[in-house]
Image 1: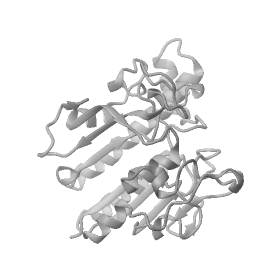
Image 2: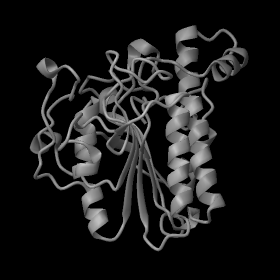
Image 3: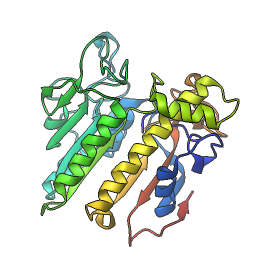
Image 4: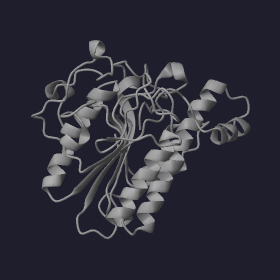
Amino acid sequence: ADDLGYGDLSSYGAADMRTPHIDGLMKSGMRFDQFYSNCPVCSPTRAALLSGRYPDLVGVPGVIRTDRNNSWGNLDQNAVLMPEVLRDAGYYTALVGKWHLGLEPPYTPNERGFDYFQGWLSGMMSDYYTHRRHDINYMRRDRETIDPEGHATDLFTDWAIEVVEDRKNKDKPFFLYLAYTAPHNPIQPPDDVLKQVMERETGIDEDRAKIVALIEHMDQCIGRVISALKASGQMENTVIVFASDNGGMLRFGATNGPLRGGKGDMSEGGIRVPACVVWPGHIEAGSRSD
């Protein structure tokens, strides 16, 4: 998830939130109460996640932006990334969703270990439906520019399900890195989900209702991916890791529960995030680590 705060799941204390599918993952494996990202902003965290190293050591000390005069770093060409290691071990590797580690070759996913990429090269979108940033389209299928219709969260979910269904009868194991842009601003949930939240949560502030709806919509979509894994017979032989890249952005209505600060802060609210790992038959369901 992108900018999901520590307090913005019902399993982490959000009384105005219903996130049954993510909560179900938390119950199905090991939930982490003190899981930390490596930075309170997007690009460095993703560099750390994919390389297993501190982001500064792989060339990404700050956010990689579309404005070259305010862009902080390039992913080191010598950094060994998770998809490269897994591909060498025989895995099919796919990235669906947000990349945010480079806009042009050799800094794009297909050059960095992913057999397949369908998603968003840049950081934030200016609109979840038109998929532009500064009027530039950064949506790609591998190296091809695409212009699909629909809410980005729905699109990423559809594409992730396509990967799951495509791999079900293949001999190779697969690695799918599904990186949603939700609930990063703009806080733009589908109208029907926002209506449900407004009707259910009497007296809720509209700004809060919007981010609740954006997160609940992502949760519904994660439920669809889990259903696809079950329907394809792959659920019991799949490790699922869920996490946020950094804390929630307070000025857009996010909450980080009891933690101080939020996205952009090195306080707990900026770097401590919800996370779990599910591995049927190997990790005890309902276990918890602090």
